[in-house]
Image (cartoon, one colour):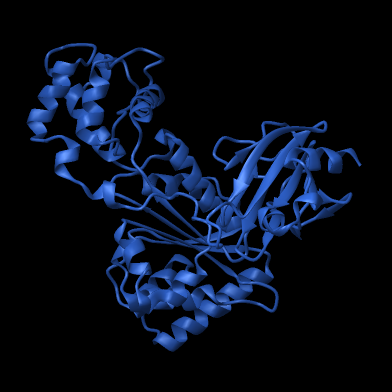
Length: 415
C-alpha cells in the first residue's frame, strides 16, 4: 500500500468506525453532547439521525469508549427483527441466554435486570443503530421498556440512531406515544467546506503526517464538490486519490489524482447524485410555540456586574457550558464542560444543573433544578445569569417596565 510512500503509520481513510480518527465538527460535537445527556438524565431518550456515512456509528463508538464503568450498555445493530427477537438481542447484550424463553419470560427477565442494576447504583443504556429498520411493534416494545421505573425514576436510558427515515417513522400517528417520550432529537448534517478540509487534514495527522501537506489546496474544492461533505464519501475519494498518486510514485496528491479517482469511481457531482439532504429538516432549535411569534424569554450572562452575553430563548433546550459544543459557551475555569441547561416551554422555563463541579445557585442556595421567574438571577461559577420573561414584559404597563433588560439585570446584580 501507500503508507511507506507518504510516510504514514496507518491508513488514514479506512471506512471502519475508528474513534481515534473522529473529527468533531460543531454538529458532531453537538450530537455527541446529546448522547452524553442520556447519562445525565434518568429519563434520557435521544434520537440521532443522519445520512448514510455521516459519522453516526463512529460517534457511538467514541461515546461508548468514554463511558464510566457504572454504565451497563446493550448495543443492538441488527434491526430487521421481530419484537421478540429484538428483546432477546437486548438480553444477550446483558449476558443472558434467552432463546428458549417465551416473550413474557423475556420481558420479566428484562424488567428484573433493570431494577437490579438500579438498586446497585448502575445506569443502564440501550443503543440501537440503524433504527430506521425497526418495525412499529419493535418500537412499541422500546417505548414500553423506556417506561420501566422505580418509585423515584426511570431506569433505562435509550439512544436510537438511524437514517432520516427514522424521523419520518417516529412522526407517524401510530408512534405518537413513543415520540412524546423522546427528550432530544438531532440531525447530523454533512461537513461544511471548511470542515471537509479540516477533516481530511485531521485524519492524515492522526495517521502520522506530522503536519506535512499531502493533499494540495486545489484538491479540496473537488473533494467537497463530489462528496458533499459526507465523511464516508470523503474517505473513499481520498483513499482512491492516494492510490492514484501512489501508482505514479508521487508524494503529494494533486487535483489531477483526485480527478482520476473520480473517474475510476464513476462519480458525478454530489448535488446531481442526490437532493435528499436539501429536504431533510435541519436540527435547528424548535420554533417558538407561543402566540406572538417572538422569543419566549431571554437570558443575560454577566461577569462582575457587566453583561457579557445575551441569548433569546425559544421553546426548547439550551445547554450552557465551557466548551464550544454548547448552545451558550462561557469560557471560564469555574464552568464545567456541560454546566447546566435551560428548558423552555410555552408555559414555563426551568434551569437544571448537569452535575457540574461548582453547581448553580439561586439566592445563595445551591439548587439542582429551579423554575425560573422573570427577574431571577442564577449564579453559575463566577458568572450570573438573569432570566427575563418576554411574556411578562409584553403585558406589563410601560411605566412598570425597566428601561432596558440590561438595566434591570445590573440593578438585580447590584443588590
